[in-house]
Amino acid sequence: MTSTNAPVPKTSMSEHLLMAAYWIVAIVILAALVVLLVYFHAFGGQKMSRDPGDWGAFGDYVGGLINPLVGIATVTLIFLTLMLQRKELQASLEEIRSAHRSAVLQRFEQSLFSWLANYHSLLSATKSKLGGEGRQALTTMYEQRFSSVVAMQRHQRAEGLGALDEEEAKIHLGEIRRASATGDAEEKGNLSNVFMIALWGYKEVIRTHRSELDAVFRTLYRLLRWIDTSELDDVQKWHYVALVRAQLSWIELVFILYNCLTPEGEKFAGLVNDYALFDNLEGAPDELIDAIAHEFTVSPPSSFAASLPPEPWPFNEAAFSSEVAKAKRKLPPTA
Image (cartoon, rainbow, N blue to C red; front, side, top):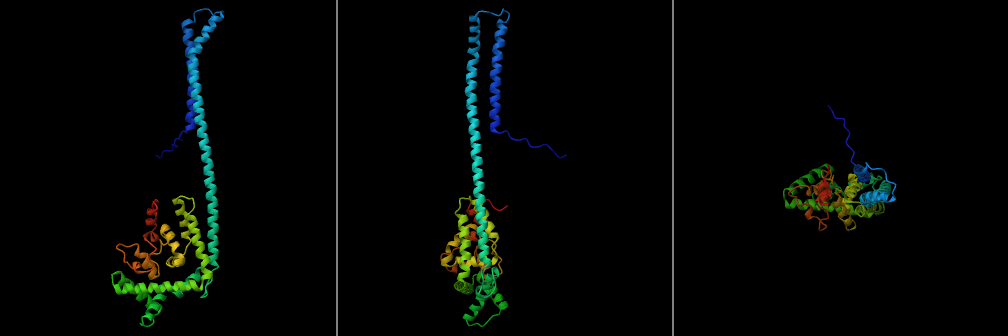
C-alpha cells in the first residue's frame, strides 16, 4: 500500500525563537503563581491584614522572588527580539540579493539573445561570390576552396600526379590518412601538405570575402568573450556558451577551426579550448577535420597535428571533449 503521508515541513528559526519567547513568559507567570501559592499555603489561615506595613512586607516578598525572574526574562526576550529582527533582516537582504541576481540574469539573457540574434542576422546576410547566402554561402566557399577533397586534388596536381575526380580524391585521401595513422612518415607529410593547402584555401576565401565574413565571426568571438568575462559563475558560463554552441552548424565550426589557425583568430582558440566548441567534430565528413578532432580523442595520439603550424598548436584535448573541458574547469560531468 502506497503511503500518502505528506512530508513534515521544517520549522524555521523564527518560529523557534517565537516559541522560546512563549515559554519564557509562561515560566514567569507560572513562577509568580507558585510564589503566591506558597505564600498563601503558609499564611493563608490568617485574617487579611489592614496594616500597610504587612502589605509592604508581602510586596517585598513577592517582588524579591519575582523581580529577578522578570528581569532575566525581560533581558532574554529583548535578546530573542534582536535575534528575530536580525534573522528577518538577513532574510530581507537575501530576498533583495535574490531579486537583484534574477534581474541581472534576466538582463544578461536579454542581451545574450539579442546579441545572438544579431549574429544570426549577420550570418544570414552573408553572400558568397561563388553562390549562396547564409550558411549555404559558407558551404559553397568551403566546398569550392578549402575542403579536404579540393585540397587533395590541388596536392595531386602540384605533385604532377594527374587530376583526380571528387570520388577518387576522397578514396586517396582516406588511404593517406590511414597510412599516416600507422606511422608512415611520407604519408604523414603528405597529409600535412594537404592540410596546408586547405588552410591556404581558407585564407584565400577570407581575403576575397573579408567584407562578408569579418563581422560575422568577430561578433561571435565577442559574444563568447563577453560570456566568459561576465560575473556569472562557471556553471552558468558553461550553460550559456553551450546554448550558443548548440546553434552553431558544422560549417560554422569548420570556419572557426581554420580561423583559429591564423594570427587574426588565435585568441578565439582559448575560448574553443575552455568550452569544447569542437565537441562534435570527430566523425566529420571532412577527412582533415576528422583527423584533427580524432588526434585529441585517441590514445596514443597519431601526432598528425603536431607537424602542422602554427606553433604551438592552439588546440588541446579540451577543445574536442566537453567532459575534459568540464574537468579542467572543475564542473560536474554531464548527467
